[in-house]
Length: 229
Image 1 (cartoon, rainbow, N blue to C red):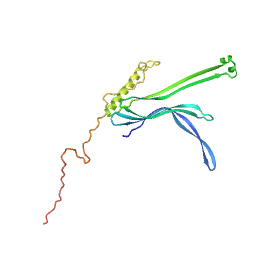
Image 2 (cartoon, one colour):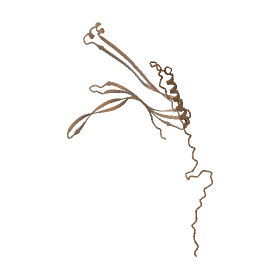
Image 3 (cartoon, helix red, strand yellow):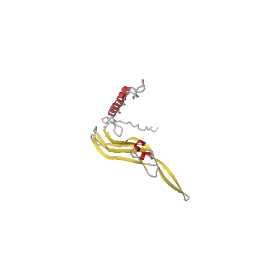
Image 4 (cartoon, helix red, strand yellow):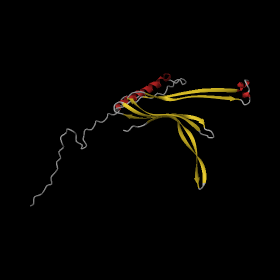
């Protein structure tokens, strides 16, 4: 099987308009086309297993967010940061992707027209606000090679049980504002369910014979002739 890409997306669709024109019989008719752009966090990984226990990962990571409104337009800009790299890591190792950091400071002022400009007393007729937002996106990736169906089943059950325990530990499994209600929890894995065993490898050669078995004998009937009277 060829390496298959894996993608994780946490985005929202943002409209973006484009003005175009078409000429029909010498008359130009403008029209507007609206396209959707995915804005958010996108992570794409394409694994490739090498000989031994090493895994080559082709990683594409993107973090985007809506920006300021463009002048003389109804569209907004898009702030985008991306990483594209290829790494080699051993089976079960951990790699950290970072560097997508942002530090944003926003200040605003609202005031009553005229009265807000009066020195000293104008502070009674206006308000100021400020905020600072700092983001540091780090992604931890731990590849594991699933060599057979049993290893896949064991890893899946372990993660399933871990998620179930985390759900049960939230506020003791109860809803704080709704007495008598319980937190939603995924059901346990039914016992006795297992993957079917893999079929035994065939030991026949392209001709259909089994190695070590005696050659098959075929009897060809001879044509019968009737003696002349």
